[in-house]
Length: 409
Image 1 (cartoon, rainbow, N blue to C red):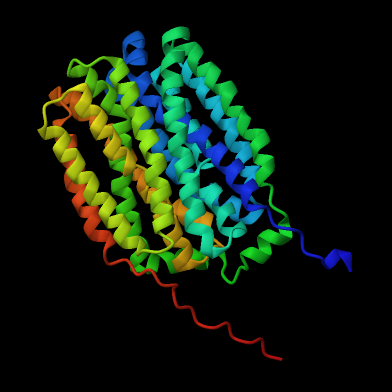
Image 2 (cartoon, rainbow, N blue to C red; image 1 turned 90 degrees about the vertical axis):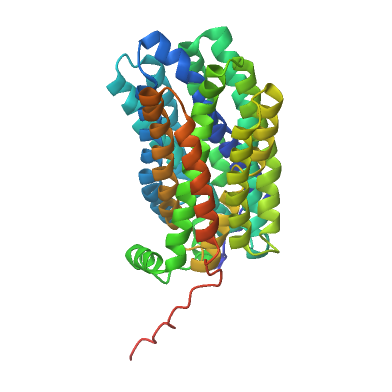
């Protein structure tokens, strides 16, 4: 009967194009928020800690809401979550432009945009990839999506810098609020047939059972710990490096180009990590990335600061920037399966966002107290070494589950 004929799954090309463009927009806009730190604080008369706290709240909101966005995406599909996320993103950017007080700024730039990012970035998109793309190409596809987020940074950060210069920071944010609504038509390309979603991710566990199983499994905690460090490092650098460079006497253009280079080289790094993850041990890939970051930051602080040294650092750290994302999410799918992939990725990403909160807030807090970012740079180095070590014991094999008991007559 025609009613029993399974619907066709989404094509690989459709999933990658629509997913990549959504991540490009969402992550690209996000990576430019550091460019607004000085214009906003100077005009509003706020401290850097005030701005940093709002962005820290944004990262924490993203992490907390990511768990629930993942649950909804696993149960209802990504389409509805993406629509809600796009609307929240546009409202948050508009509110960020129009907020007259630190409290309203924290609620819009922080809570609302954080929730929007939870519904428009990796956890939701990777859930679709996990359900729609065969396992033999899954890590590669996740690398492509992560590379798209990096290309978004390369593309959007210079555009945001030009918008601020030409339109002023208020109007620039309102323009971005309109641009981010392009996620709505793209979301239709990720509207999964319900039957295919269920066939691709048969549920043998409830949500509660899946969460308990994951948190009882040591490797899940190790992945969360490593992702915590990832969040601390990348958000501290992304938000505070423009101000760090300006404090050192370099022009704002150097910071814009550096952030763009991070995005450009992370296109290659993310794609390479996803591709290598199909053939090599993902835990060793992750350990190498975190250790490489620690070395790169150390050398950046040691060598004399110049535009050239900034660009070299941006290229190296960019290659290592989001390359943790495909390896980490592919490991979660490999260990636990794809039925609850978006939700479990959301929990691991919560660890990332707690680190992001501390990295961006501590940067502003310690700068206001000491007049320097040095202590936070040193913390980032130490955490990189720690993350490399905690990823090595991760067990990559599928978790052993008892066979389901047959129903008694």
